[in-house]
Amino acid sequence: MTVQIFIFLIAAGVAAGISGAVAGLASIFSFPALLLAGVSPISANVTNSISLSAMSFSSIHASYPEWRNHKQILKILAPAMLLGGCIGAILLLATPGASFQKIASGLIALASMSILIPKRSGPAQAKHLWVLVALMLFVGIYCGYFGAGAGTITMAATMLLLGVDLKVGSALKNVLLFLANTMGVLIFLFSGQVNWLMALPLAIGFAIGGRIGPKIVRAANPVALRWFISIFGLVVACWMLLK
Image 1 (cartoon, rainbow, N blue to C red):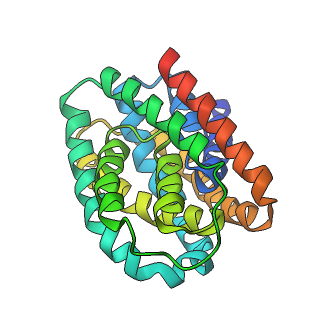
Image 2: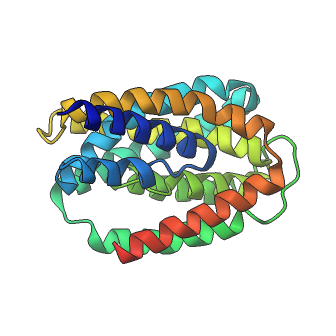
């Protein structure tokens, strides 16, 4: 690996880390970067998931003030995300992902638009919780399988069904995606598909971007941020359909 590719992957990781922490759309930067660096699609997806854990851990720590009062909800949703991440990772290694990616693009577009619906700020509600648990199982499967836009879906779901605002929804998304991705990582470690040389610079960038992202969420104008996330999510959906 050349110095140029090393620096390129760090830069891609920073951009992906910020995007992932803010909007849950990390893979829109990191996955294509790995492909451009010459990594095969399946290996790029697995390597991306391994590197993504650095961003998840960093963003969880940085967004702790927003999610610390919602630990009970997280305990209820955690098993669904853990199980889903495990199932998704196994499916990735066993089957092609073209059809699943097309379905996910529609869900990302729907989630991106739903973020624009105004939400009130307040404690998470137990209403519709069973719907959210079922949805998180599906999101966990998708996250373990590919994951681009999983954060957008997770954030929109928590905001719609729990009644939390954008900042709390973003923080809850950080924790939930970490759980699903961790299960995938544990499986991918033994898959033989990880390109460790490419994973290192990407993980460095992810860690930096994941630390910066929650600060952006905290300081940004909520309305502007909603529109940014929505438009960005629609771009991801279109990219996935064309891909």
